[in-house]
Length: 195
Ligand SMILES: CC(C)(COP(=O)(O)OP(=O)(O)OC[C@H]1O[C@@H](n2cnc3c(N)ncnc32)[C@H](O)[C@@H]1OP(=O)(O)O)[C@@H](O)C(=O)NCCC(=O)NCCS
Image (cartoon, rainbow, N blue to C red; front, side, top):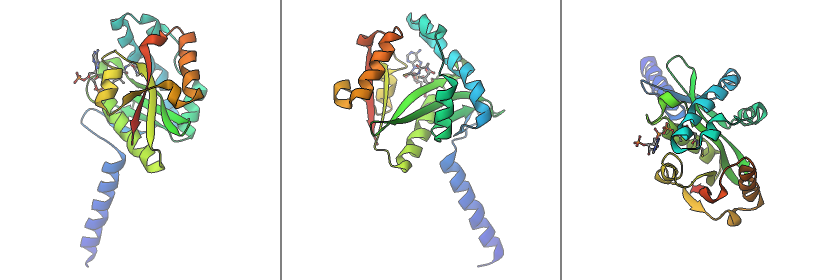
């Protein structure tokens, strides 16, 4: 084989690896979060939460964002991904953690002006690919069962509602903590996607 063919093969292999690890479109890219992204994610989360005002849940838009130590822990565990604009600035993120044998999504947020462009789905796809390779067999989350951008959206992405009592103590604790933060427990549910 001549050196030109070897170079061409190497370039093709790099391209293949890049397309596997990074989703890029004209409007956004998905990549692992870097340490310098972390302080910016609060603004993304706050902007994303504006959508709750449209469904009379404005208190969620005014509430707390994720604690910096929670973001830091997900980042350190390589379980935090960002969507970025063409200036490589974060416009969305997804992060999660190990919970009772599942990969549990702690937060997914896409900044208000970038919603409904497929960024949430792309973040979810990148995360699922990564955690499957790590050996996880299921992804879980808690959400509002009936809000269009929550339960029904997750259903379209392959999640289904499960009985929290079947999921173990940690899931009941999350729902209890959400209730303490003012979320109506009757509207909340645990959803799961089998990988
Ligand atoms: C949930 C969220 C991450 C989705 O991000 P996204 O980039 O808009 O997602 P996608 O573009 O991949 O999918 C959008 C789909 O969500 C649903 N959706 C989005 N906004 C909606 C709205 N206001 N009403 C009803 N359905 C809506 C629709 O099915 C929409 O598809 P469509 O545009 O073809 O109708 C984003 O809405 C968000 O940040 N919400 C605030 C934070 C949040 O709710 N996080 C989840 C906590 S469990």
